[in-house]
Length: 345
Ligand SMILES: NC(=O)c1ccc[n+]([C@@H]2O[C@H](COP(=O)([O-])OP(=O)(O)OC[C@H]3O[C@@H](n4cnc5c(N)ncnc54)[C@H](OP(=O)(O)O)[C@@H]3O)[C@@H](O)[C@H]2O)c1
Image (cartoon, rainbow, N blue to C red; front, side):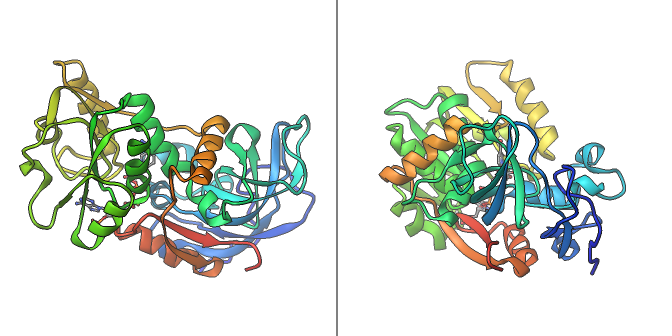
């Protein structure tokens, strides 16, 4: 296993010589390429803060970047291997502010925060204030870390891309995963009727999150449904676009939201096909890219505090077992979020 000793800061800041522990990889591949090593401490730039990380929630994006997939990402990360700036994985974190970059007034040292920044699977990460929010005291560090990518993807898909209205019937494929568990709850909070698609072992979970109807896909494919939906959020990508479009009402909206390969090819092929189909007819298919912002992070925290959403945590892994956490995420069987505990490890 590589030690990663002497690699540069994952986040690219200048350092004063201090180092920290981080989960890193020197080549692309499966979870076996990850190991705990030492790397220089990041230093916050103007408009950024340095965060002492307490918990990190994993996302499929972490898996794709670890593998260097799709190949296009290697143009930014390094063609043959991840460049020194891109060796630390992890994105969604919670922790406490350890230092302020120039011009930062919204946060103070010691504040409890959560947010999004590459290289979060480390003792410290630097983050722009625009992708950072305060963590309310009643929200645990694990629950706060679970919110950013999955919660925002559900919110941005349902609220902004599909414009879900009260009374809409929303189908969530992949309802038991990181995004799906938030999507059920956010759709319900928008006043929708929700059908969740999952395997048998997750039927009670999704009912408990508020799903009005459940399709257990082990008993028959969702494409056999005789209902018609105003919105379909597809987190899985296991059905062709045509099959899903056939399940929509005439004015229905299909959100293709899977990075995995499926009948329509890989994620990029699916996006191109979706955009092509969007030009046709009244049924609308959209792919969308959720980008983090502080206002919506604060909204998710407020929703978690007042009970409109409850983050689902499948398991919490110790920092040294981050590779096992990634291997578990890669099975695509996680129920809600997979979290890595960082501080104190
Ligand atoms: N648009 C964006 O900006 C954006 C942002 C983030 C992520 N994404 C994409 O969204 C996708 C989902 O992310 P995620 O975090 O929710 O993934 P995840 O947590 O890894 O999803 C795991 C879940 O998928 C379910 N699943 C697997 N096969 C299924 C099937 N055939 N039918 C129904 N459910 C199935 C599993 O439930 P069962 O065990 O019950 O099958 C499991 O609970 C990823 O491909 C990711 O790349 C998009």
